[in-house]
Length: 74
Picture 1 (spheres, rainbow, N blue to C red):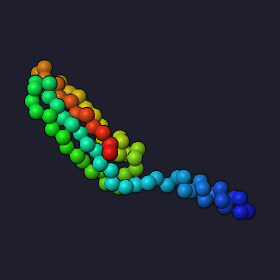
Picture 2 (picture 1 turned 180 degrees about the horizontal axis):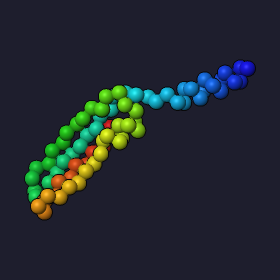
Picture 3 (picture 1 turned 90 degrees about the horizontal axis):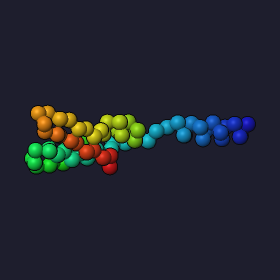
C-alpha cells in the first residue's frame, strides 16, 4: 500500500508544471541600415513550454527591406 501511495505521489508531482513569470528579450533590426532596438516582454504565470511558444523570432520582407526580430527566453 505504501508503494502505491509513493508512486502516486511521485506521478502527481511530475504532472505539475512550474508556472512563473518569464522574460522574453527581442532584438529588432532592419536591412535598410536603420538602428536596431531591444525590447523585453514579461510572460506572466506560464510554464517554460508556453513561454517558449510565445517568445518567437520573426523575419519579414516589405518593399525589399528585411525586418527581423531575434527573440530569446531568459
